[in-house]
Length: 143
Image (cartoon, rainbow, N blue to C red):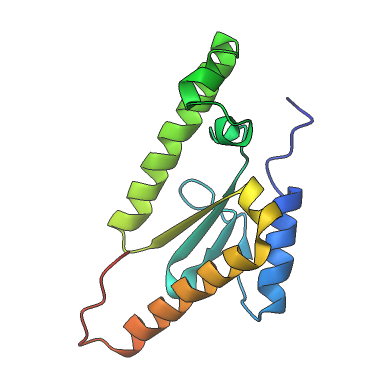
């Protein structure tokens, strides 16, 4: 496990480079709750790039009928670890949303398949936040 990267993974680097080309400025691996991969504090936007294996999306990629069907193939250690990662993701999302932030989570496989689609979702979230900041009297609800 010591060889597994937790920061600057290939999907993160591809995503950040594309975001930068679109003119979006950000901070990476910010020391905030849950350690977002990308944070745009100006718009209260936290972005996480989740690995398919580590965060429980592997079953969809392998076309298994469910997460449980995939996890039964793993040792108890890995089952517990992946379930804990998924539970932590839910806790982190709730923390940010309760504090007025928007959370975007992208799967590694989604970035590999449709990087531009992920960038567009991010820019749409930023535009929505810009609109809310410019219109204080308008009802801007969290997504």
